[in-house]
Image (cartoon, rainbow, N blue to C red; front, side):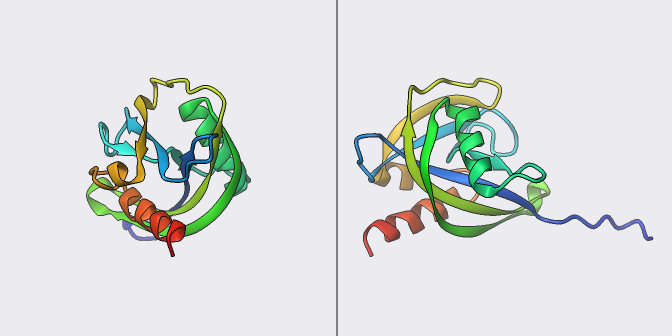
Length: 143
């Protein structure tokens, strides 16, 4: 075997969380407290653990980062996330659904949590390819 290290892309999940009142044009974003993209707003989410389904992963990640139950997650689409400058290669599986419960800041991973209108969120410099994910979601809402 040569000295080149072969890495496989990671499988990740991203959650578009809307409020319990049913407003689909309001989304929850978290501000990252970890690298890469520390200090940037993003959709809650993260890596799928070994032998975990994507649906279980997105529910777990939302709970870990926001304290909310991610109810009735629906699959939106997949997105390639290629960031060689961060040595980061993932395939993100995006879901949308309702956040239930009370928001609880988890400072190990998240420095801030806030609700944004979809237009506000689309105007932010988001982490990873989350702008592309939200844009796809907006097109899904208004075909």
